[in-house]
Image (cartoon, rainbow over all chains, first blue to last red; front, side, top):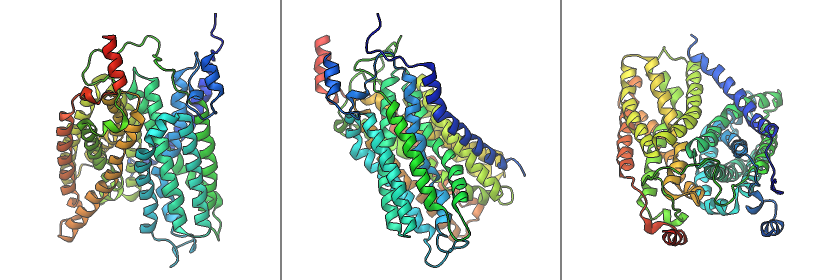
Length: 42
Length: 463
């Protein structure tokens, strides 16, 4: 029998939560990486 | 039933209301922590506002009444100072009040800091910005920094290093988002007769508030005595305590002050070069590193700063906290001794490799230290103790730049060529790592007289 108080986290909630922080972070890393490449281009 | 009644009598912000119900995934907590750390990490990118804020009146170039860079530099310094102060002062409140209350408070202070600064820009009063971003923003930095870290440690007793590494990586990564976003916003709001700093502050305040509130909504604390499924307690290890130490009792232990010195040394060494990397690289390699390439180096170092936070803290779960700091101290010593050599032989690649590893360890020092504190003082007051320890960061924020800038200036006035002006500083930094090594060597398990009394008695009864 399930606990009446149980509130299981769904995979969709996990994807949304990680996407919410992951997408801006990846965007920022890519922007920085593009700038960092200038070090190797003469 | 009792729990439900207790819960009904509490408000939404209380710790009791954030206790996770069965079925809640602990993997929701890292994004909640990142919601806060990615926002407050903006502090590392604050310098993008410096130049535009020197032209608020003159628009295209600084007018006599415009603010000077030296005056603007105090905004960031104040924020870092209040980060240390607030994390030390509010640490116990953060721990006992719970993460939701702390994260929401941080969101309010952070957004208010931007809004007040926007008013300061609008009426051209620097003191208002000192109060807004410097004081209020600094308080948000302190509260927002320690609260998610402490929560993650409680959720991940099996991987505390990895968990804190994820959150503190976000603090390093926040600048990656803030920097291009702020530049883009300022470009959008700037006209021929107006510099768009005020509007950018308002937009950032709103966006950061929403982000941080989302974090405070989804964050949960584990129920008392909760353990992850299949959790096996670490084997008997004197350096991983099963007891808790009360926050102010931790200050009476030599372990706290030894770790304080270790963090201060590691941060001084990193912060000193992080702020000066652009100028230093161009002066050490004239003609080889251009200003554009130097900007690229700063970006690369920021990536290593962020990556090191996750990688080193995760590594510490496998090799132990003390050994991780041994690696930092030994490797740091070797690399700082090598930097002048790379300059003398003109090896840009060697210089870049040395600095990138040093900066990864600078980040790693921040992210590994909460787990080191947990090992020493238990989980109960780890957030508050972490808050007190962050005063080492404030101290390093003064020592690091002073060591680099003043010694360089001294050398140049004594006719040392610019390319060699940093060599003395590099050897001093290497010497600092020797002090850190000795302190780390002296770290032992906390004496049981410092353990919390109730737990000592319970443990004795169980035995």
